[in-house]
Image (cartoon, rainbow, N blue to C red):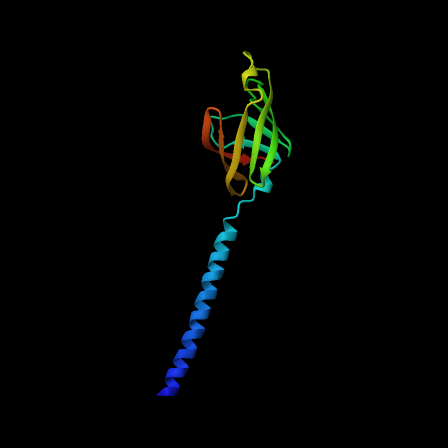
Length: 140
């Protein structure tokens, strides 16, 4: 009887160890799959996923130009990356706008990439009169 008890206790200890290892691998796998890949969106060509927004975006590490293909309006911004997933956009100039938008020159938006999924990402954009989550898609 004592022998059966030792056998059971040894196997119970082993079973607990295996369960703990499985839990650790499950948690590691989940956290790795949820990691944002912000570096993939630091530069390239982008578009809004919202069909109402027709502007195209060309971005390098240091600047961004957003163009409306129907009106020809171009918004030029400089970018300062705060960390891998957050940057500050500073409006530098607006071209081809019929009324001019000089009042936005110098203003800033804070952009925080909160989710990445393949060629798409969602960003929380905040500053001035905007505070919303916007989804973009990389087109190149």
